[in-house]
Length: 100
Length: 164
Image 1 (cartoon, each protein chain N blue to C red):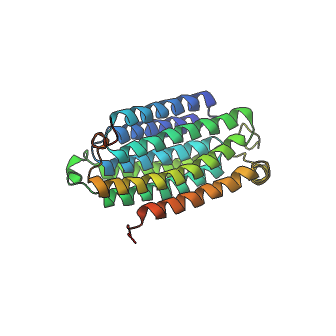
Image 2: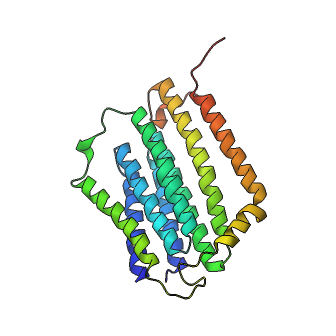
Image 3: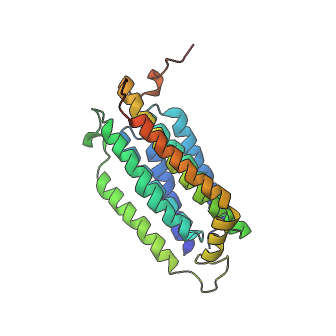
């Protein structure tokens, strides 16, 4: 029997690791991967919530989160490809033309 | 018994997530992210959500990570490759992925026979379908519009510029 409290703890740790990676890394692809990690941590929390309340809305929410995340990753990766074609770098520190 | 599966799955998920973040090579980051997604799918199996677990494996680990791999191959950098790997990395990752898939299936066999919310096999599919297509039908249609917008956006972004 899996305790939902433990699953919430795992979800919290995964979200924290994703957030840490998002703040530390500079490669844009790794930033997108950390966003996916954070979304998965949220999905895990939703599914644990359906186990607690015995209502299915949590799993329905996960369905929509997965669908929207797929759309977001597609558009984000298309943008990354265009950035690479324009600037030939994947370092987010080099993308500062809008600064100042 | 299920606690052992939960401990192994969550441990591998957290370890793989740490490796996603702290790995220099972006190819191995994508590989470890796939491993994390498979572990989270195994956790979904443990939490009576087989539909969402299958969706996670199909869409997240199957489509989104393939998309990531395509883009990583397109924007290939010079300093990626074998020399950044830890020893026996490929064997380790293959073992871990096999372990995760085995555990998800093995757990489904080892739970109690009473079908209620306390057992892991209880998943009322009919009620889930009713919630999806009747209660949240508007969000369902809007999601299809979101996917259409994403397709149109990606095509517009990836098109070569033609100046007329």
